[in-house]
Length: 178
Picture 1 (cartoon, rainbow, N blue to C red):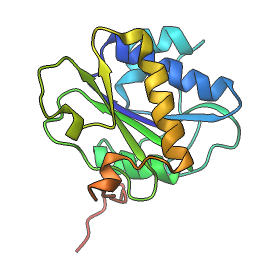
Picture 2 (picture 1 turned 60 degrees about the horizontal axis):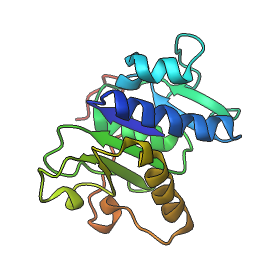
Picture 3 (picture 1 turned 180 degrees about the vertical axis):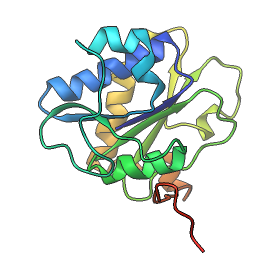
Picture 4 (picture 1 turned 180 degrees about the horizontal axis):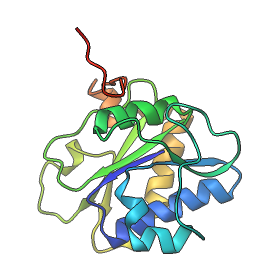
């Protein structure tokens, strides 16, 4: 599963490669319907043969392997994270360009945060699981896949879980709690 906000062309290509790796390798890749990736030309040209359309309803598991677009229950990031986790993914990869602090991860599905490291932020290691060197985008996919492998094997715990920075919010489709 992936969440992205503020993705540039190199990041869009990274996420296309990651989604393709899993989807074409017999696994499942899930992208939320409101992800900016689905309107990013680099992502769509690298991965999609036709216009993206919802293939999985909110919080339902995909019935087959491949690339799936998850129906958005809400535009709220935390609700999208919750819905993505409920879709049955085993790992979530997230990127946010403007994150000044590490956004929460999913409490039950490891959320691996990636961040482009341009050397300007001394606290970058405290905000992401994988730092991607701006000057070497050709190695980004390998870095992220290595981190995902370590998380999946249990030899690495994502930052959000280590720091207990997790949350979820169940979408209520416009309903109000009293």
